[in-house]
Image 1 (cartoon, rainbow, N blue to C red):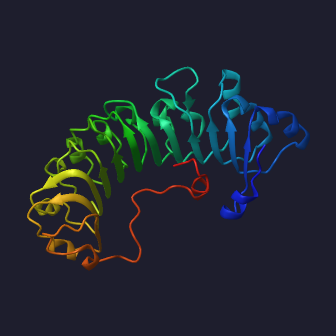
Image 2: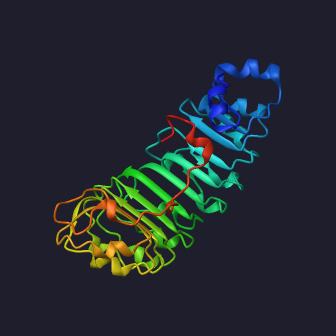
Length: 294
């Protein structure tokens, strides 16, 4: 059992990490007031000693139907599924049992199911998306979705998440179709990073977009595509602009160019920098103290 003073000092939050071998020791201690718990899948029975847990990390291990029963009744706010599943099986986590869940991190989308039955969930971060589209999320109440890697080919399904305001997609080499974004009129933040089959001309007009991040090997003839985002305030630009005319960027509240090309009319240091930057999605503070989390 690892009850880390280092973690506590850094975050000012109580944190404990347990494995199946800790059950006997925990039984001697009785009910413990920890709110932040990291537990191996084969030690889920130890959760009965943590009735106050709110933020939970599930780590790799042998999982059982009996073990899953110890998740029921917990008032979890943040959940991290720190193990890999490449298909739905009997031991996927049923999100319907967490009526208070607000934040979910998962290695793949197949670690969980019933997302539409978890209407409190507002932020989802998936490390590797194994499907072709986003229809797995239809009916959810997500406001922010972040996907780091995977096999995504199109964003179909995003239009059926009516409350979505923030979308971040990275490292999707197969992604070639984003036209469903034209049905996401409430989108305020969009980040497309290293999805090199997507050209800026494919991104539809988004009337409420405030934050835009474009990073990759793509090129744009000019910056006229920014006219599609009349409310844009924050821009992180990591693609090549052929004509080099960057004057329009000076009208933004905050702008950063990742590469200062010689033919650009304005250098990055001369662009406006806001004191407080817009955040495209939020990660709970307690997860930031874990070196292996992201």
